[in-house]
Image (cartoon, rainbow, N blue to C red):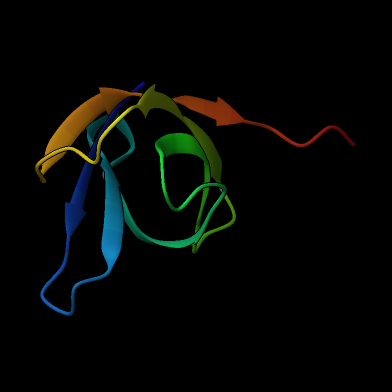
Length: 71
C-alpha cells in the first residue's frame, strides 16, 4: 500500500494511508540510523517500510506492507 511519511508541526513522524483515509503518528521505529524496517503507528498497525541507506527528504510516499499479527 502507498503510505506518505511526513513530519507534523511538532516534528514527529506521521504516516498517511490515503486508501484508508488514515493518519497516525509513528510511535516506534525498528531502526534509528538506517531508514526503513518496521514502524508501529499509534493505532497499533505495524508497517514494513523499504530500506534506504540515507534518510529521505520528507514528505515521501513509499510502498509499505502492513504486518498483521497472527492470533
